[in-house]
Length: 117
Image: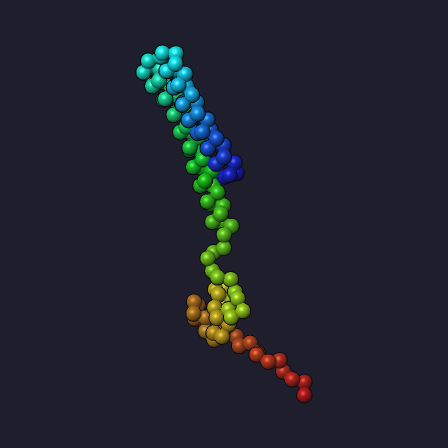
């Protein structure tokens, strides 16, 4: 939804700019005075350019909010030398005996399976 609003808003603002540039050139050719040019400027700014930029800003805000909602929380993903604390779910080193975040003693994992000798 954010991308759609962003594209529509930028398109609307661009339409306003193009309408303003073309309209001012046409008013100049037909000999209209500064009053008509001022009206064209105000008309395009209030009805096309500013609302288009507002829509684009809302769209960008929605995209940013969605991106931060989907993005990971900033915690590093566990690798071969890290693991996740079973108590607080923070990423810690695999060799740790106490979690550095919650200060709880971690269960000791058997390094070697028992032999059947």
